[in-house]
Image (cartoon, rainbow, N blue to C red; front, side, top):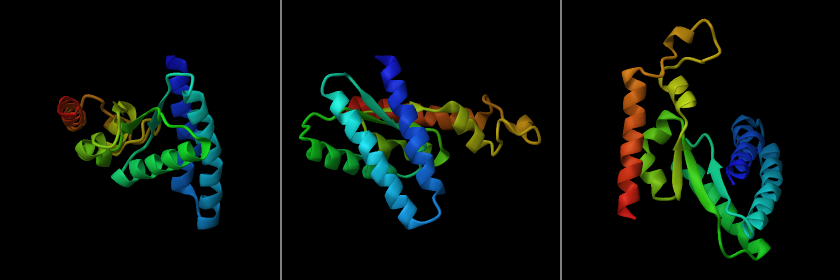
Length: 160
């Protein structure tokens, strides 16, 4: 069910990922990871009876994906779950776009987030009127970054 997939992605995005990147101390970081583990366990239990896919937002490094995979394996083992849901990564940062090949080797699917990719490639926050003229979705740099990611993702899909 598409709505369910969206909710899982949204939950990871809102509750977990950006929060970890903004946390000021290691003790708060550990607490936040523990909170996210409860959500991940709920998703894994739900995946027993439903076709769920988990999408990792704001990937900037392969280690982001590896950490989530490790957490999924650990939670699945704790819950006695053998079959894992499909795991994907959002390609929405220039770093992720340039590492699409490596990321694709670790996930089941990717999704290209063109709004954020445009914002980061063009160094222009779409809601900031002072730099909004630089936010150009069809700028050649944005198009090449997206094209490169699609090409590599498709090439990787034919290699599995």
